Image (cartoon, rainbow, N blue to C red; front, top):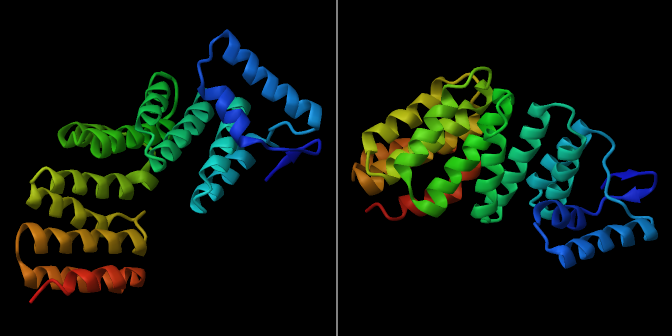
Length: 246
């Protein structure tokens, strides 16, 4: 956890103050919390935008969601451009999806998309958050497909194509368009920005589609084999699905 002038970050306090819309009494409570932090020598502040963003990413990797929110909140305050602010807000939305707080995640995404001069690096994150909400909360797969297709049309975000493409495949699978889902999963193997791990997940999802939706056990087995070759950490999950094949 970072400090500025020997003041450690207090993510819970920062997050509560930023995300709430308090009454007069609630506002006094929030200000009181901040004053208490000041009085005790603990004010949440980050060294700089990039450091805060990086720390938030590290906390998310470790599933330390409150700390991640604190770092991203600090990054929002330290942002010096609409794009920086939009990216930090989008990352807050990602954490809110992780926490299944879809209402807040949707609002974060909409806030980013309302920033007209934010660059694609911010918009693609917001669109992914919005699509997650459409998929996981609303079960609105056509809506999520439309959102993800918009994300794929953005310029300069090749790094995001693998996660967007695999999410599109999932949307098509859940909406019953199995051949279209397979088409999306296969695209993963031609994306230069896709690493072996996510290619393995694409192969796993192909196996699931073949096994449970198309009932083609031979293709399922071949896909599962490829999944483990690309991503050995999937072995246990693959074994569970293979055990259901006579």
